[in-house]
Image 1 (cartoon, rainbow, N blue to C red):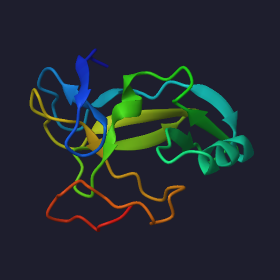
Image 2 (image 1 turned 180 degrees about the horizontal axis):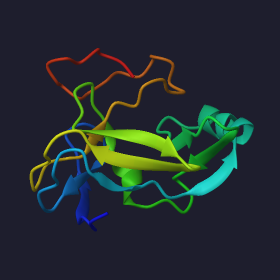
Image 3 (image 1 turned 120 degrees about the horizontal axis):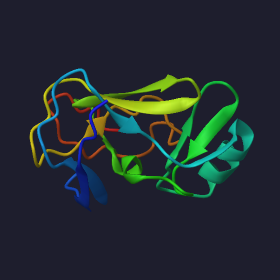
Length: 133
């Protein structure tokens, strides 16, 4: 895996976002989410207390809370028409590019099912925006 460079800065989607500093080819692993590994029940307890959630369940009874010890991938924002995707593999959450990502472009993923349960307004402004997360 090539070591791609990123920058965290203000996002037009939400808060801060993660932006590529160089070209990333399509279908490449770009990195992994860091954070505290916790139980799924603890993840759901923590998620109830916060509006902005940086927790990802891994499907094996564990989750990663990127708000505690996380890395810059916690700033990947949701988009209904993303340029990347997340994959759970070997107890980790990996990020991949769906298409070429240009320098200066914000990395985005479709979060799928979230703890927000469709009650949070989506602000991705893509042509395919479903309107909620």
